[in-house]
Structure formats: C-alpha cells, structure tokens
Image (cartoon, rainbow, N blue to C red):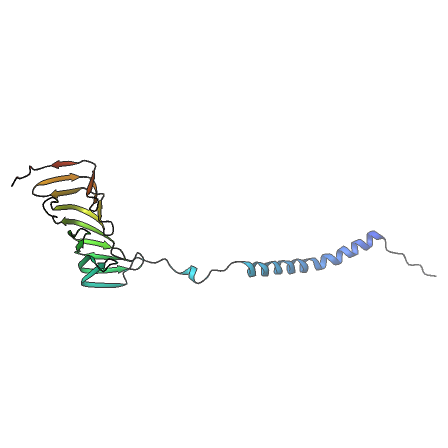
Length: 210
C-alpha cells in the first residue's frame, strides 16, 4: 500500500504566495491605470476663453478733423471737443487726441476754453487730460468775477464737477495782471476756490477805480 504525505501549512502558504507573486504586477498595473483614468476625468481643463491673450493697447478706429459734443440730461450743451486726429483704444475705452480744443459751458453760463498739443478723453467725455502746453481760459462773469487762465504741461479737466487738477507746476493769471505760480493745483469752479500747493508765489495788481 502506497502512502502520500499531506503538504504542511507552511508549504501551502508558500505555494499560494508564489501564485500571488505572479499576478501581483498585473494587479498593480491595473490599479495604476484606473488611477490615471480617474485623474484625467477629474482634472479641470482650460477653457478656450482662458487661453485668450490679454487686450493690447492698439487703436481700433481713427478720426480726422472731428468734433464730439456732450449734452446734459436736460438737453443743455455741456462741452464740445475738437481735434485734428483721434485714435480710439478699446482696452481703456479712451480717445487720444492730437491738438485738442475744448469749449465747456458751466451752470452759471460761463464759457471755458482749453487747448493743448495732445489729450486723452474718456468714454463719456466727462474727463479730459491735456498734455504739453496746456492752457485753460475761463471768461469773465460780469464785473465781480474776472477772467482766469491756467497754464501747465498737464491739466486734468472734470466736466461733471467743473474742477481742474494738475500735479505739475502751473501758472494762473487773473484779471488784468494778477499772477500766481505753484507746484500743484486743484481748481473748483462751482464753489469758486483754488488750492495751490508746493512753492506758491503771487503778484496782486492794484484795482483800477472807475
């Protein structure tokens, strides 16, 4: 009678481990493939709009010998802008003007004119920046309010509030001979005050009695 030996527990575990070792790399590759697929499905993708380049400061249309008028809500003409050339930039929605000339009409009926070598106007015409040999002249209003003139390399006009600002040296002429100079200035036509800053100098001429 032939006897067969029963495999020991240790021997059976070793055989099972050998079989598992054969299939373990295949199992590991399957897990990695599933993980990669999950990452691809759940990773955010760039939208087409995200890849659009930032807007450049390039004009989209040009004007020549043009004029722009701005009206108040009641139909009153507030200001007129004339220029020999104009370039509109869509990224800032502004117009760069060569040889700008401006006429504005205050609530008191006072007319103000301005000119410069170049200028920048915002979309609704409420702000005008004048560069290089900028001059603003306000006509006299009766006998009590003399004419005024501002001269600077930069003047910033605000049509809605009727104010003018400059961070550069300015010269202000008033009436028949008054003259003021300053490093900076803020002018308010509605409330009728001028704030001169920095090195301020002034010359007041004696009034003529009639």
